Structures are given as structure tokens and as C-alpha cells.
Length: 166
Image 1: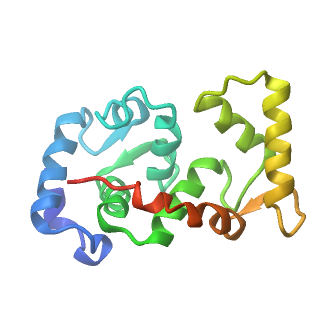
Image 2: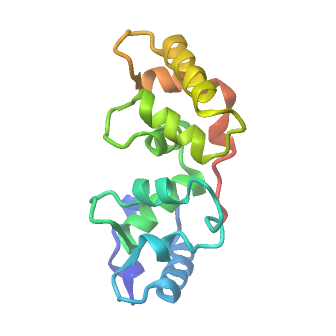
Image 3: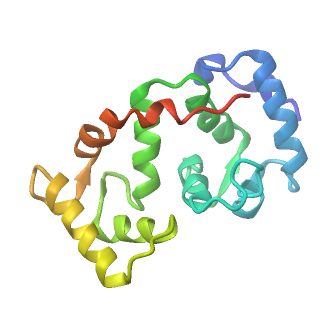
């Protein structure tokens, strides 16, 4: 495929040439249409199979919104996990919750809670979602901004758990 040779080094400062080459070979094995991975192909990656957040992860990797993940997008996404800084990793986690860029709505938070497994009834889960938004929404707009999300999640050191070895 030769993708790694044509990829600007500054775009993936966290990956070296050998890591990009390994990722290129893995990408080629999954890429049936020579150029990009469909959502189904992308979610068949070993680290995503059977994961409740597989589809949201594919949406975050799909930076151009075409419904598929190209090699460049896969490198950018993976590089965040290799050695990305705290803000990059928090932004990635934040984007898992957002359907539209910018903030996490009550509905988005509710749907995600249901996706990751919730033993509560819908009404109880909605009440918990409402309470979460009310508690964390410091500007009172009914949504969670990246800053509001980071203020809470950043202290949990989630970014240290978002690591992929290439």
C-alpha cells in the first residue's frame, strides 16, 4: 500500500517509521476495498471486537465524516493512544459522547450509559443522567462542554488508561 511513506511525519509525532509500517500492514489486512475501512471492518479490530463503544470509536476516528476510516485517520487516531498528551486523550474520550461536535447533550449521555451496560431501568437511568448533567453543567446550558467534562474526568486520570502499544 505504501501509505506510511506518503504520510507527513509531523501529523503523527507519537509514532516512529517502524510503528507506521506495522500499522500499514495491519490496515492492509483489513482493507478490502483498498483505501478505507468500513465501520464493520474497523470494529472488527481485535481491541474493538465486542466492545460496547466500538461504533462511537469508529466515528471519532472518522474525522472527515464519510462513514469510513482511511489510513491517515487510523494513524491519527492511533497516535493519540501511543503517546498522546492528556488533553488529546481527554478530547478523544469526550468525542465518544458527542454526536455533534461541541458538547454532550442529555440524550447523548443517556444513550452512552445504555450502551456500556446499565442495570437500571430506563427511568432510573434517565434520572441519573439528569442528575449528572445538572451537577456538572457549570454554565447552565443543559449540556457538558469539553471544559466541564475535563474538570471532572481529568482528575480521574482516565488518560493514563487510554494507551495502545503499536
